[in-house]
Image (cartoon, rainbow, N blue to C red; front, side, top):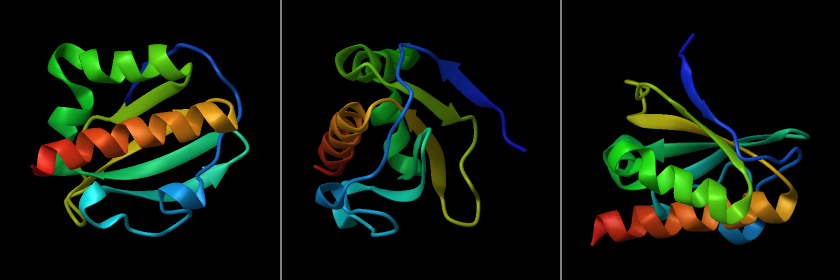
Length: 113
């Protein structure tokens, strides 16, 4: 089982949204997929090569996303070698999770430029 970095800002309920690809749909060049949803939040599979941009130096970008949206975000320590993706768990209110997914999508797209 992989360990995760756990940083808390707050929140309790979350879900994916069809506007961001919905449950199970790849977002093409966006670089992530919603792979799980629960009453406690959602889980994204983010391309391994985009994680540096998502996390930022010393975790600065993830902290910014959490402070801006109010979500709690947990990032797996290692990529899944079979898919070259890393698990990112987002916990918060539905609107907070949507905002965090959008911010991650923007960072992944910027990484492709």
